[in-house]
Amino acid sequence: MQQELMWGLPVVLYLFLAGVGAGALTVSASIFLRGGDVARGLHVDTARYGAFLAPVPIMIGCGLLVFELGSFETGHWFKWLNLYKVINLSPMSIGTWLLSVTVVVSVVYAYTFLRDAPGLPNEMRYPLRRKLSWLAVPLGIATAVYTGILLGAMPSRPFWNSPIVALLFLVSALSTGIAGTLLIRALFHASNPDPETGKNFSRSGYLLTAADVLLIGFELMIIFLFIMYAHLTIGSVKEAVSVILFGGDLAPLFWLGVVVIGLLIPALVESIYIVPKLLYHRDFSVPRGVEVVVPAVILVGGFMLRYVVVVAGQITGPVGI
Amino acid sequence: MSDKKANAAVSRRKFIAAAGGTAALGASAAAAPRAARAAGTAHKPHYGMLIDLRRCIGCHACSVSCKAEFDVPLGATRSWVEYIEKGDYPDVSRQFLPRLCNHCSKPQCVDVCPTGATWKREEDGIVVVDADICIGCKYCILACPYDARFTNPITGTADKCDFCQHRVSQGLVPSCVNACIGEARIFGDLNDPQSEISKLIARNPVTVLRQEMGTEPNVFYIDADHTDPNGATNNGQYVRVDTHRQHAERR
Ligand code: SF4
Ligand code: SF4
Ligand code: SF4
Image 1 (cartoon, each protein chain N blue to C red):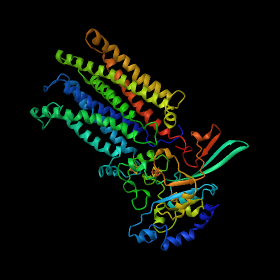
Image 2 (tube, each protein chain N blue to C red; image 1 turned 90 degrees about the vertical axis):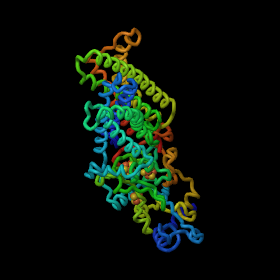
Image 3 (cartoon, each protein chain N blue to C red; image 1 turned 135 degrees about the vertical axis):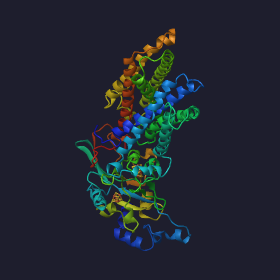
Image 4 (tube, rainbow over the protein chains, first blue to last red; image 1 turned 30 degrees about the vertical axis):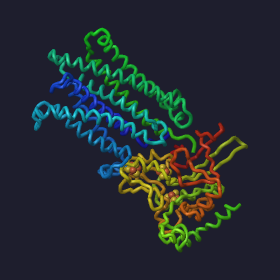
């Protein structure tokens, strides 16, 4: 790649991490709400892992973004606060405010999952958690979509300039959000929970894994449509997309890293575990090793997707002058 | 050729005299066209540039004077001159394409700026960057279809051609226009039909760069070669573009 990148690894990581956090937030709040209208719902234990996870990557991602700023690099440490002096129609401006609200909501939401949270008696904690869940679902979706709109807003970058990038990032955020939640759960849950908790765990695990397979299928469809439409058109978009098609600079990383390793293989492995329950109503159980490795691979795939998209958009441009 | 005559008539001395006096192109109120003043409406200039490539010899005087005017840091360029070589011997050509910010009427760079640090000025149409506000997020640099912007390594902010607003507001022409030995760069008020630039644009076939981007550039070219290695005009022949910038390729 001959060109210097304006947006490098910090931005790639930020788009990925914000996606994971936003996805985890949406997923946690949705399964919590789906768990039944009781204080301790069916999926509450899994929702808790998602709730604790969500704010962390979002905040790390935002922090990384500050490092990438030219003003920060030249020693104007707090100039980024200028972002908070205005609000305009720039996707980055709207995104800044949206992310800030999402961070606050996700932190308070996570707090409501703390057992014996100081200053928050249970009779306040449960209704607050429920209310915040209703906020967390749309905020997580909006944050994930915004990461795509940020890139999509520019006709000067034909690879990014389509509505489907935002959709791709949304679906990938939900899928990596699930993966993050499942990974944290696999790493931290007790190996011998009591039978009732164990059953709920398996139910939530099945729900999330099955949802993830659907999401990955959807993601593959979006990628197919993206490439097909780009290929059927002529001019700048076709030229731009050729960097991920055979012979392009980013083709190996895209096809092997994103499509095969990041999407196809995890979806296949996940299907192996959900099909017996889906078709024959067997118990859903996944060995701990698989519980860890599959989500980890999905996360790596999600990172590579952001990497390929961010780099491809910058090394390509409009054709002609 | 009538346009050549007209072009020769815009001597710099005349330009400055006119701006300092009453009539044409300065930014001060005194420079508003007589008609507008008579009608009692404030004339707002809208600055633009016309680059007549029949007069350009690719000497880089504009790039150098621009660098000197602003102490543009090493490796960065507000203005640069591209060379376009094409064809196979003996059927070859070499064309020049001086480049700068187009001060677009629909500037994408402005649309994406999250801090309001860059805007198109109401009073004269110049697209400016306020380094005191800009946080250096580089969004505008990616959004500009002309690669006209760069990060100033000293200030850490977005930087680009500002049509020499400090000179123009004093009734002077931009530094690159001043330095151009062929008088290929013509600067002036597009809102004034009597300005030299408006007359030349009216009398000649002109083009802008990447028109399909919809940015409505205000830098016009006469006789520009729009050949690009990736473009539709290269006709399958050998094309080499030398950008004379840090990035060897157009983007
Ligand atoms: S050329 Fe680029 S930087 Fe200049 S006004 Fe147009 S979009 Fe903005
Ligand atoms: S780099 Fe500066 S001028 Fe450009 S979009 Fe960011 S804040 Fe605005
Ligand atoms: S108008 Fe001024 S800033 Fe712009 S290219 Fe010419 S000399 Fe440089």
